Length: 385
Image (cartoon, rainbow, N blue to C red; front, side):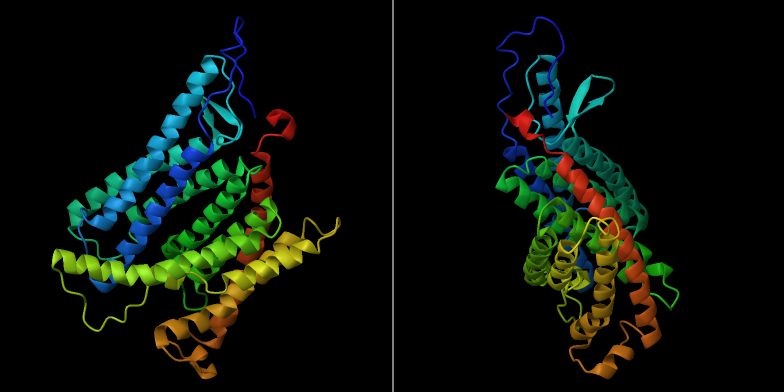
C-alpha cells in the first residue's frame, strides 16, 4: 500500500519514494526478538539450575535490551514514514505493511511496526512492575509470576509485529523466509506463556499441554495459510531453534554462575528447561497439516484447517507423555507412560488429548485466517509497478 500525500503543489522530487530499505529495520526487529529468546531461555535455566535472581542480571539485560531495540526501531520507522507522508513522498508498502493513521493523520505508522511498538511500550510497563516485584519480594523464586507472564505476552505482541513486517515483503525471498522464521519464534516462545495456566490443572487435564497445542497449531497453520508448505518450514525452523537452545541453556547458566561466583544446585541434571517445553513433534505435525490442507476442495476449505488443527493438537498431546518420560525419567517403556510423576494416568492422557484436539481445532480455524491476513499485508503487484 502506497502512502501518498494529497496536498496540492507536491513537486516531482517530493513524490519520490523514501530510500529506507525495508529489509534493514525488519532484520533489526527480528534480531530484537532473538535477543529476547536468548535472555529468557538463559534466565529460566538460571532459575532451574542456580536459583532465585535479582532484577539486575545479565539475562535480564538481554530481555530488556530486546524490548528497547524493538521500540526504538518501530518508533524510528514510524517517524520516518510520517515525515515522508507529510512531505508528499511515497512510502514503500513493503516497509511494514499498510499505513495506519495515528492521532488522526499526525503519524502514519506501518501496521507491523505499530504493533511491535505497542508491544514494546507494554513491555516497559510490565518491566516497571517486575522491578517493583523484585524490590518488594527481593528475589524471584518462580517463572510464572504476574509481571513475567506480562513480559512474555508483550514479547508475543512484538513478535506478531515482526511477522507482519516480514509478511509485507512476501514478494522477496527474505520476506517469506523471515515471516516463517518469526512464526516459528512465536510458536517456540509461546510454550513459556502456557505456564500461566499450569495452576488451573484440576488433575484430569494438563492445561499447559492443551494451551501449548493451541498456540503451536495457530502458528503452524498461519504459516500454511501464508505460503505453500508453510507449516512444515515453520516447524523445521522451530525445531532448529529448539536444538540450538537445548545446548545453549545449560551451558549459559553454568558459565554465568561461574563468572559471578555462585554455586550450581546440587544434583541438577542439566535438562534444558525452556526447550523441554517445546513439543518435539513439530516437524511431523507440520507435515501432517500441510498434507491435509493440500487435499482441500472448495466445499471443505473452510472446515479443513480446523480438522487439521484438531489432528495436530491430538498428536502434540499424545506425544507429550512420551516426551516427558524421555526427558525427565531418562528411560522409556510403555508402562512408564501411565506412572510418570511428570504426566499422570491413562485418564489424564486421554482427557488432555481431547482438550488439545479441541484447542487445536480453534487454533487451526484462527491460524488459517491469520495466514490469509498476512498475505493481505503485502502491496499488490500493481502498486509495486
